[in-house]
Length: 140
Image (cartoon, rainbow, N blue to C red; front, side, top):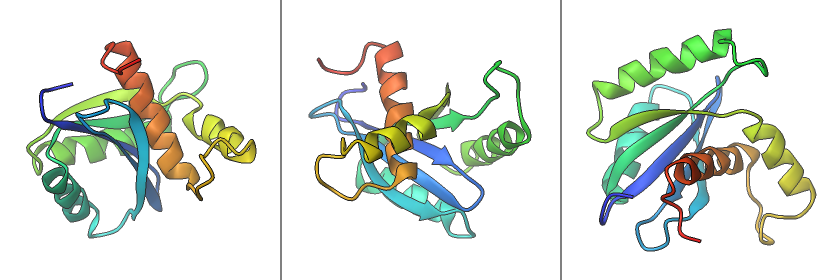
C-alpha cells in the first residue's frame, strides 16, 4: 500500500457498483457501499477518492471461466478508460473471477460479521483482497 493512501475497489455492474476500501491503518479489504451506475457514478467515485485519500483504484475485470473476455468485460474496460481521464488515482484492473459467487456464499453462511452486507460491496472486497494478496500488501 502507498503510505497514508487507501485503496478503493469497484465491482462494476450495469445497475450497481460495489465499493470496497483498504485503509492504510489496517491494509484489510472491507466492503464499503453500493453506488448506482448512473450519471452521478463518476462524481460519487471522485468523492470517495477525496474523502478516503485514495491512491489506487482497483476495478474488477469480469471474464468467462476460461479467461476469455465477455460483453461485460468490454463495458468495464470502456468504463475504466473513461475513469482514467477523470480521477487522480492510479487504476489497476483485477480479475474478478467468482467474486460475486464467493460473496453470495459468505453472506449465506453468515460470514458478514453480523452486518447486512450487500453482495456487490462484498464482491468488491474480494476483488480488493485478491489484489492485495497478489501484491503481498495485505497485513497478516
